[in-house]
Amino acid sequence: MEIKRIVCTVTNDLNYDQRMIRICSSLAKAGYDVLLVGRHRKKSLPLETKSFQQKRLSCFFDKGKLFYVEYNLRLFIYLLFVKVDIICAIDLDTILPCLFMSKIRSKKRVYDAHELFCEMEEIVIRPKIYKMWKAIEKFTVPQFKHGYTIGDCYANEFEKMYHVKYAIVRNATVLKPYTEPISNERYILYQGAVNEGRSFETLIPAMQYVDCKLIICGEGNFFQQANELVKQFGLQERVIFKGYVEPQNLIDYTRNATIGITLFTNQGKSNYLSMANRFFDYMHSCIPQLCVAYPEYIKVNEEFDIANLISDTKIETIANELNHMLHDEKHYHQMKSNCLRAREVYCWEEQEKTLITFYKNLLG
Image (cartoon, rainbow, N blue to C red; front, side, top):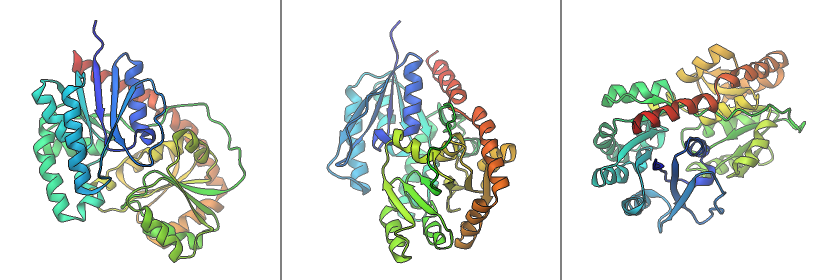
């Protein structure tokens, strides 16, 4: 029997996309020929060897409208000639070439919605940009009858907007044996994209009132502004930027942290209905976290109590809750203990069962 090939498309650097590494590794393990296509940037490190194939496309432009136009054109041309049985568009920014190619070549297509793309803060606050992406979403998503997303809230929104019923494949972390921290240094950790909508404009000033370091692992469209905030408030010794950290090194930062940060501003449904990768990463390292009281997080926390949930992301709220977590040792250690139980339920080993079943059903 011929091995079926699944091609997944993203616009980011492949080395740092932990969700796609998990998905592609699981599909390869299940016997599929998997190709993940992403972008090559000036600072990109060599690709790490994986159980699946990888391809980077180089562009003249690195950001903005011209980047998206150029990348989508290059992706479309590439997809016209590559072997494929199923094409999977990851989020809205690669959906057009996947749609057109699947029609031209009569191939099956899948939408993997990591976000409610049009409802992300950086889109919502820009009316012209929002109008453009919303037009693309309305045109494309109804034509993707098969797909999956990261939580019940997102799935409900897609069904309500476009009458598509998507499966749930959560961003849960691979279950590995728990190891105790190897460092006694106390620090608060934020890991992930340093983007608009992640509450850095209040988290960083809040660190004036918290006697603990904040380490930030990641970069993004708010990275420069975040650095400027640190300088503005004189927090260079307390807030440390590590930039992009490769996944195998990020594990050490995570498991040795004291508190994890999962904060989003309530600007746009994508943030409010989110289920972030880092939420599970902290859980699996048994790190209590400061988290927003949004629906998906409330649901998990009511079951296991692994986080302090806050209803707003004001400076004083963040500072007060971080100090409370640092000093309430009884509740802190109870949350660590609860993480050990939660990670057995919310793990990739459970989520990949849904993923594999999805593709088996699609391929008949």
